[in-house]
View 1 (cartoon, rainbow, N blue to C red):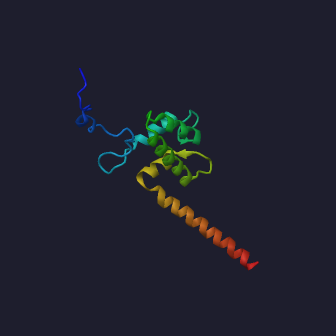
View 2: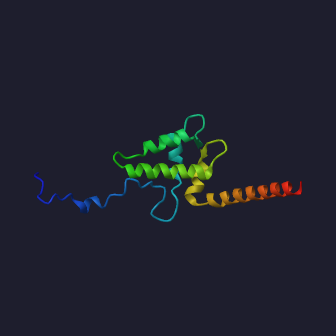
Length: 133
């Protein structure tokens, strides 16, 4: 088959495909797909602890989901996971399934707000003790 002089690419068909960066974390309805976090952990977590991911395993996850020649997608995916890790900042350095699920359904942010408020109260008490001395 010879190419056409206008170099058409069959755009009508290519527009029907989903985006390659579509994570399938959300269904077409506004409900969260609970299978996706479990599959991420089972694929990229090491055998002793399947319930959490380390930063090295997160990097392996990013590389495993990267499309070739999608440089913007690589950067966006890396920044997304890096910002999630910095936002959460786990004490043991591992992101658990429950924390990932809380990110997807939105319940993580009230938990973080409680932690921040507790730290503020502790800092205020410490500063008040310093003032009294």
